[in-house]
Image 1 (cartoon, chains in turn purple, green):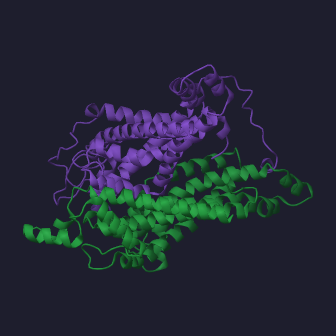
Image 2 (image 1 turned 120 degrees about the vertical axis):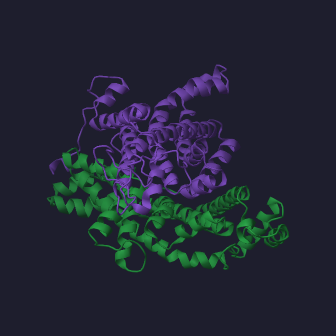
Image 3 (image 1 turned 30 degrees about the vertical axis):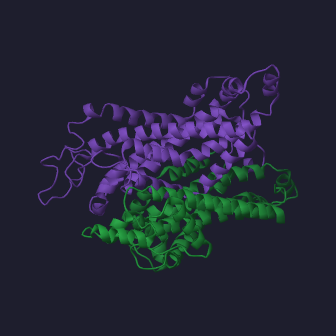
Length: 299
Length: 306
């Protein structure tokens, strides 16, 4: 209890300098996160070798005689779903969907957010205020409602779902990039660059963007977690990734009517979503502590 | 203060206009044809055309949007295409359950989040702190529909402590609002922890201890009120996140609020309802942000309005 009152001094400065990745490996939570991500990536990549079934294969003895799904057992490690398909196989292949959406959607969101934030922060003036007012407007949109409307407008395919999520998710990145860029743009070294005649493109790409790389890495990692959750939610509502393509969200969507009798059909895919989102949050948070010293000990 | 308020109000109105324009444009682009939904499959092309003309859906986009805005200014959100009633009446009827759900969620997330954050800050650096922060991360990363289904399974199906779904009594409210609260209580725990740690570093805390005040008294009377201040303003901002969760949580629990209303409307291409609910949610978010900005300097005079 006493340490609550005394200001504590962390021995941060005395630590030997190491690469960001080395520092990452010394944090237990980040290690857990990296391990979980590795498991999901390997499971997705090696899915055909890890299971004897195909994801859309309705197995002959995959249902009980009265047509009910099988609980976890020796043949079907995580049980079977309502159509008699192997749940483990569907979760393994579903990992491909989640990773694809996580990386593509978040990549697009990151590019849009960074572009808008950097341009608004560097040029300011009317371009800046138009862009940031637009960002404010997007903040006022109930994100999930917007995603649902968008998903309903376009017929959902894997790429469309990724695009919809990206269109909803760039806002936060844009605001962070805007703040960082506008404070960078006022520093002396940028003035110096301008005095010696450097053009805007040169300043933006060679002098401002490199300073933003740590922020981009941190938000890129944390964003994957949000993206994975949003994809799962859309698919759970039936307007995300469409069956028979397995996704962790639509596995639950397809089976929820039966979940009181067969809770494993919600539990395992749900645990997979949680694990992946949690993993990227662990790694992202550790990266923020390492790469962004101003945020250390906060949030 | 007055000019600041005026500027923020104008900004809020412009944001709502933008939200209405974007939503209207999205729904205009919808490939599903609302007229076909109303007329039914067996309708003749002539009937379809006459319904289209009646609803004004044969007009160009800007004319349709202009008409919508004009009636919106008179407080008219239009009529539902499928349910034969005013959108405003439907929303007003469905709003109380949603507001109740949100109020329950705010209570839960504050109680859970602030307690976790307070304990973590006091025990900073210990196992307790670390495990609480892991728990807060789990809360932030858990998909709401999974949390909802698992809570239902554990506390309604297996233990039978709460009803499986529906609306009406206090015990109906517990599981849905807990589900909505899980995600945000993780954020509140983290914010409370860092805010409390900041406060505990201040000189006046050391002074209070030095004059002989007990540890608990310092914590509860001097540190806690100051640490909570920045978090109260967050409740306003949090409304946006809560709004996002209601569609999912209301559909898991069969809660008869505006989330269910808009979800049914989306499936039936009932455009006036989708527009109405989107605008109401955007209004809630804008008002929440506005309130947060107004309250922040009132409770902490160091924050200046720009």
